[in-house]
Amino acid sequence: MNSPRRAGRRTRGAAAGAAAVSVVLWASAFVSIRSAGDAYSPGALALGRLLSGAAVLGAVCAVRREGWPPRPAWRGIAVSGVLWFGFYMVVLNWGEQQVDAGTAALVVNIGPILIALLGARLLGDPLPPRLLAGMAVSFAGAVAVGLSMSGEGGSSVLGVVLCLLAAVGYAGGVVAQKPALARASALQVTTFGCAIGAVVCLPFAGSLVHDAARAPLSATLNMVYLGVFPTALAFTTWAYALARTTAGRMGATTYAVPALVVGMSWLALGEVPGLLTLAGGALCLAGVAVSRSRPRATPPASTAGTGSGTASGSVPGGAGPGGTAPAGTARAGTTTAGAAGTENGT
Image 1 (cartoon, rainbow, N blue to C red):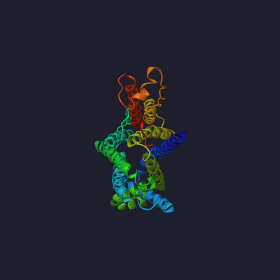
Image 2 (cartoon, rainbow, N blue to C red):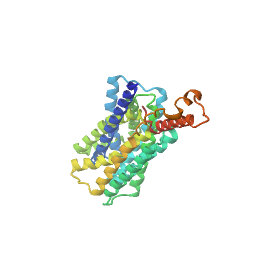
Image 3 (cartoon, helix red, strand yellow):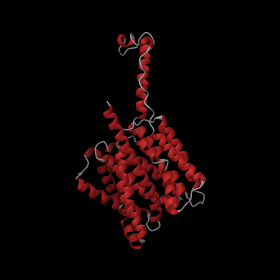
Image 4 (cartoon, rainbow, N blue to C red):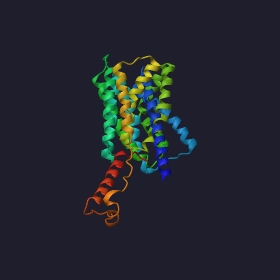
């Protein structure tokens, strides 16, 4: 009896750990994008990042002899490759050159809300109250972080639109990727999605060659770092976790990114955050904790009182004339609803 529960806990723990790796590496990507973006154009940076990531992923696939994904998985891989790996990376790089970091983080954080809504509509994912409440708290925190970091101006309408398009591409890619993970491994989905994204960005090959010839070594190393860690590693750990939980719950996890970006900027760049920024980061983390929490299972009520000897034997599964059997039925219904509301892919 306890063995399946332990296995379920281990699976949830492994998925949570994989999601944490993705979130930390994606937070570090914001700093690297800002640095490399000074030397590389948006399309060139996206292509260089994807080529670096595809090279590492391809080598790992060859060593592990993963092979080609099954045919039914290709639709989701192709859509996520175009929308998330290709389109998202180009418009996000472009948008971050048009707006400040706070505005970019604020607008892109519409993505998890879109993921939850699209997942409920297209995948039948549940929207439990804790997930919705946690996302509301985290989004309020993202708004606070965005406002606190957007005081110096420099944001354009074009930049806001580009970041909004990035959020849409991100959400569409995640929802398309989820069904593919039921048919192919996380490594296969990530590797071939990254390769498709690189093909989509091939029109920027000339810009990549031009920029690489003039870019400082630090910018090129940042681009390679983006490909190896926030792309190859983080997208694989993300796919591993996504295969074991719902799209909405995974999307809510990324609300930890603004808080981590604040902390990394503080430690690595000496950018001391203000009080509003710290409060917003705390709200982001609190919301993630709420969205990923699971209500305590209610222990089964012991049979006592008047109905213990009669109703259990005389009305099996039916509606009894008194109050005993319907009460048992209601308890079972409540337990089922709770399980459906808190299901996270075990």
